[in-house]
Image (tube, rainbow, N blue to C red; front, side, top):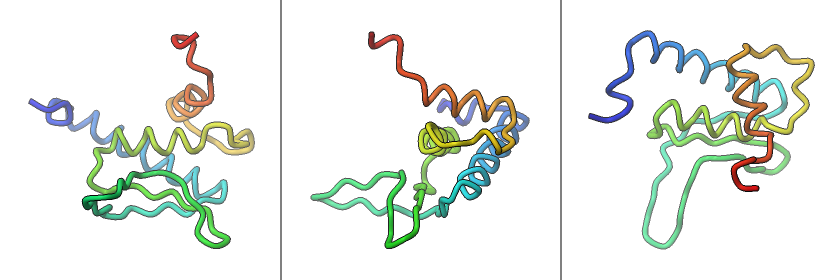
Length: 107
């Protein structure tokens, strides 16, 4: 059984709320967040993440990814940003702060 199939409806609602919160936070710090169907073809690799298009900063999320993976991508892109004036729930703040910390296990 896949990991997402094991989640309770309450856990899924919490995950979706966290995803929505991180999308709003990204928008508030200047990103446009887009969910796209990223097509993969022979010869190139496509993945979710941040990019710049002309003067706009974008975070593109592959909509086929599970919510947990999208949360990880958003937390990674928000880490290191000035978020002090932005309200984030304790769970969201912890995720973003953890992404900004160096990995102690690698040392």
